[in-house]
Amino acid sequence: MDKNLIIEKYKKPEEKLLISKFLDKIEIVNKTNKIETTNFLNESEQAILQKVIRIIRFENYEFFGGLDNCERKLIIIYPEKMRDIFINKNFKYDTIISVFRILIPKEEQENFKHNVYLGGIIKLGINRAKIGDIVVYKAGADIIVKKETEKFLYANLKTLTRFSNSEVSNIKIKDITKTERKFEDIKIITSSLRLDNIISELAKTSRNKAVEILLQERVFVNYENETKNTKQVKEKDVISIRGKGKFIIDEIIGNTKKGNFIINVKKYV
Image (cartoon, rainbow, N blue to C red; front, side, top):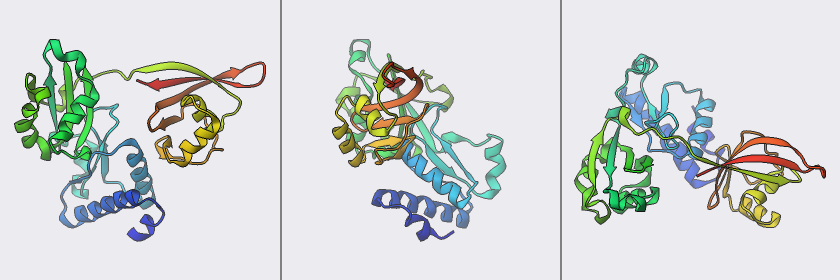
């Protein structure tokens, strides 16, 4: 494995660093015969490392985030001697992640959104990369974090004013609240399936502005950064626009009399 050759394929410093750290962890596992994990990765980072994994034909790994439909996952890198443990699903995942349940008093519940929980944890000095998904529901939230933060968070969460009247406890991974992904169905009409046309409609802006957004590297197609305005969009593509939201091109329904495309889009809410 030529580490430098792989890293040189990427231009952005943050991507080079991400890949370098991942490859370093593989080397550590090979030397120590012990498990290593990355921090929690967003979907774009996962896509980058998945591509690296294919390039180097690496097999002893698992993406894990605590839930089947979670967005943020870490990668567990394990030695060959532990392959059967992972294949047979016998690994104890609670040795690498912890889950906190915060239950909010009824009179305060409507004020607690995702950003309130995340902002509180970050205010305590916890790096965002140490935090996985935050599952928010009416009564509170289940917060997935790396195991190394457990003692500090348990001791300090209730020191925050926002959580001072709340009930904080550790729960098992299997007890994380299951919630369904929510979408808003919208229809767009566009003259072309080019990405700039689609971005213009999704972001409710002009074509010129859509091109600017692309050049600002704010657009991800299937979790990979995309700047090419002429890229053709397909059904089931997932498009994320920083500052505007995340969308699934659910179905290309048909065409108008003028030949424009009618597209059903699901927007994450």
